[in-house]
Amino acid sequence: MKRPRFENITGNPAAVVLEEIPQKYRERPDCATWENAKKTVHNIADPRNKATAVILAKTGCRIREALEIERDDLMLDERFIRLRERKGGSQTVVPVDEEVKHAIKRYRLIRPDNDSEYLFLSIRGSRVDTTQVQRAVRDAAVEAGVMDEGETRFHRKIIG
Image 1: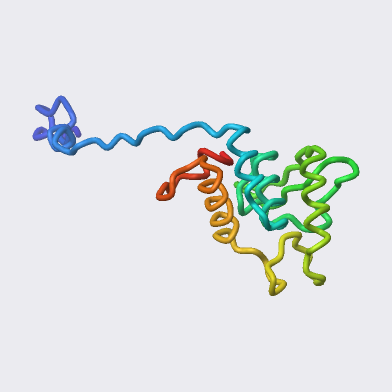
Image 2 (image 1 turned 180 degrees about the horizontal axis):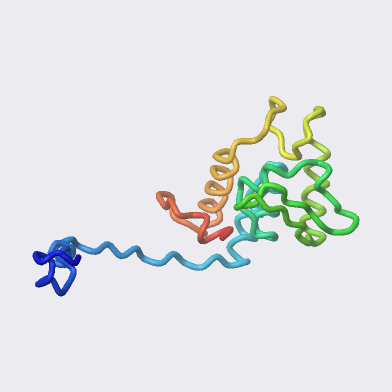
C-alpha cells in the first residue's frame, strides 16, 4: 500500500462490484414452540423415534448428539443424561424430567436385544441414521399441521 500507484485509492475498489450483486435476505423462520413440539411428538408412533424426539425437544441437543447416547450415559434415577459428543468435542450432563424418563423406559421395552452400547438402534441392530429420525419428525409435523408438506426447515419450527 506504500507504493505510489496505491496512494490515490481512498475506498474499497470492490465496492462497485458489490453494489451490483443482489443481496438475498432469508426470511426468518417461525420460532419453535413447545405446543408445536408436543403436537409433533404426539403424532410419532414408533417408540424409538418418539423417545429421540422427546430428548431433542426437552434437552435442546442436536440429532447427532441424541443418537450418540450410550446406555451407560443414562442416569434416569438421578434424572440426568450425559451427552458425550457435543459440538466442539465437549461433554455435558443435562437434566431430564419424567416425560423423558418415561419415553426412554418405553423404548427400552422394544429395543433390539443387542450388545451395542448405543441406546438407539435400528431394526437390524446397528446405529440409527439421522435421516430416519428427521423423516419421522417431519412426517409427524406435517400430520399435526405444524408445517406444510414441502417445507425444508422443519426443525426450526418444531425442535429448535
